[in-house]
Image (cartoon, rainbow, N blue to C red):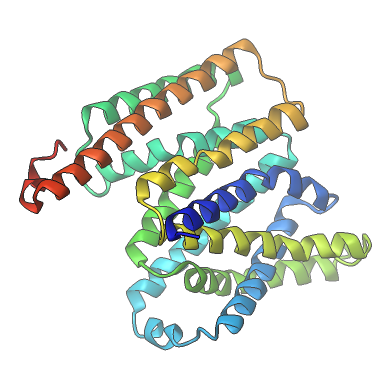
Length: 308
């Protein structure tokens, strides 16, 4: 199978698994969101260590220990992803799947804004149009919910920051997840121990199946991440940008069709504006990618003339 097709399949698998997460977390009840989060941290480390052991891939550790800046960035990433994971698990188990899907729909727009504010990047006109539609959608949904969609905004901002920090660290997915979960291991194990000592732990007290599902939280964290890494090295970034919408679409469908969450007309309007923003954003990204490739084919010197 050609690398490109294999990469697309890996990417589709990763985003499909992420999109189906709302079906998994409710299976872990009566565990609370924080207990699930602690087990997810602990068992993710076990899962990724197994992967590294199979690949016999340990040499990177010595080099990373000599780069305190990267270690600091990965520690910051660990804190940020803890917020993201915790809020997402809470949202799903609190029957706010649709709002959590909204967070991942608007995440690309948040990432663009981070590029402007933090990296001093310049937006193209259509990108500004997309951001404007996204802002309008948040205002409409704030009126609909009677409050700002804080779950969606927290997920979008935290995931955007996480991606930004990971980009600065420039460490592979398995290696990065290893460091991040090592950072999180002490508080995770501390909380699990606290629950056990106070008789509040559900691990082992709700049957073998429930315990296996808590362990599985680590596996379903590591596997899609590794699939995503396999996709990222095989397919263009523009293709990854299109595949990323699989996850929030599936999350949205889980919320509406499976969890039966209410969708009043005003909420449909807000989501429609978000989808319009993403359509504009995607069109602009594809157009720019095509123009860049055409310029490179003509002559590397003409690349500077591509509209930015």
